[in-house]
Image (cartoon, rainbow, N blue to C red):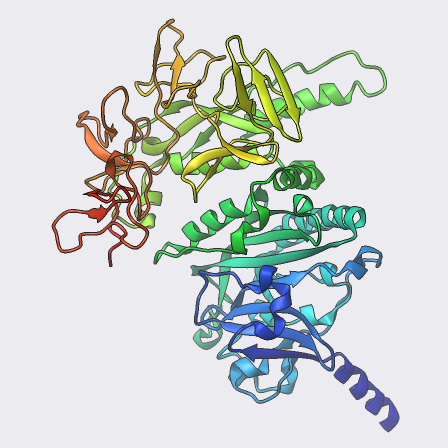
Amino acid sequence: MFLLCLLTFIVLKALTGEAEVVDDFNTCSEYFYQHTEPSGMDQNAKKICQMLENEGYYYATLYSVHHKIPLYSAYTLDPKCLTTDQQRSTFPWHIEPQISHFSEPYMDLESDFNKNIIKRKQAISNDYSATGYDRGHLNPNSFQCDRQATFTLTNVAPMDACFNRIQWKNSESSLRRLLMDQLKEDEDAVVYLVTGTVPNPNSTIPKRENSEDSQRVTVPSHIWTAVCYKHNTKDEKSFSFGYIGKNQPEISIIPMSVSNLNTKLSELYSSSSQVSIKIFVDDCFAGNVKSENAVKMFVTKLPEYQRLQMTTDVLNTFNAGKRVSDSNIDSPQYEVTGISTKIRSNSLHSYSTMAEEMKNMGSACLITTAKKRMFNAEKSELRKRDVSERSESVDCQLVPEKSVAGWQTAADGSLCQKVSDTSFGCKCTTKSDTRPCCSSPCLYRKEQKSYLCYSGPRLIQCSPQYSLITYKGEMCKDNYPCATYGYDYYWCWKDSGSWDYCSPPLWQSKAKDGNYCRNNHACAKYGKSKPYCYTDYDNDEKPCCISDDCFSAVNGKICKPHYPCGYHGHKYLWCYTTDDSWDYCCKNCGH
């Protein structure tokens, strides 16, 4: 009996994991792309290098003592997992003694410690009991073979049971299949992954009468993953993308580029204070052709029901068409020849984010109605989200993304008679001349403040598909949507037969007085000598900046890098500009 107990003790100790709470991630930096951790997260959070006793490190975690959940775990896909049977294994749950100021240098079973002391700084298993929330892994067990180091409460966050077991599990499986296929093909790459949370301070567990044990652990509003696939010898085979989902049942997973995920997370984290999230250095090849194709491949591997969200009436219509199509498998008698989809966004900002994501999946959404919105730019992000759907709604019509190769469209939107797309670039022959065309979707690049696409290996300027209405709200011809068509402004041919200006796709332009430009009147010249916009419906022309950032000035000028927009001792916003002059600007960044 004594021998049995001794053997049991030895086995349990063999399963014990070590984890170091460190001042920096230098000792486990191999789990970060270019050995650089994500920036913009809580600087007071605990840094943990997760490891097993007598073995090396397995991943890194940034843990919030305040929220009692991890903000992210950074890890790599173990190549050995490519051939290992991925039956999920279960191990005892561990806690991190060092967070609670115990001297033990390894994670251990919570039963070995005084829970009343442990729970002051971190979650315990009892926090999840009878709450409806799972202990959702950030670093998934399936990506680490059977590594018990993932079974620590510093690597899990409360996930809605349905979301965790269906949507998030399916996304993990789809991602793993995609990466497995790619690694088998290349055999010389490293996959860096970061999975994280967005803490929601208004949602906590458990809900209990005992106030001491109630509402201790923050429930995240969103869960996200970013992927950086780095080929060791051929950068053209490298790619990145990410996805995010609301921590709710029956919510779809939304794939997007890493740069768009940075923007999305920065907005979600900025409800209380302004932050700027950066997951990977240089966004890990975001925007190249391989990255854009990876998003599409990921979507095709998701279960079909996870790819679509629609109203009941639209879903019924879609399913009716699908049933007709499916009934033809053995003896084709019918063909679904078309389907029209209209989408309503509750704000211009949400439309712009959605439109960029759709381009990565081969679709564009052309604005057909843009209703008014009015709010002060200096108000908080919460104020922006409080504006009613009626006052901000944007309707758009879903169409194929025609800026990419395979469509007879130039980078400026012009129709082509012939397209030649080679490894050296894409060329479009029009009625009058030859123009460049895109090999990848036309996407907004925040760093360059411009729309760019790849034409072969080169980045070129492009005109995105975005609107079917002029700046006065009149309809454009269906085959002539808003674009530049060789000019330095956006315009279209109207149904009436004449032409007019379009509001450019500058979704965050704002006036000198600090108010955002009107929904369908972004900052532009509209035939005049200097850019202006309307912020209300009194049609009062106001000088404006093309972007809501610290370095955009009026008249299309740019503030000097070391002199952001601010009051700088005056009663108006201004900055020194790169043309060795000064001008007014639109956002106070001179704190």
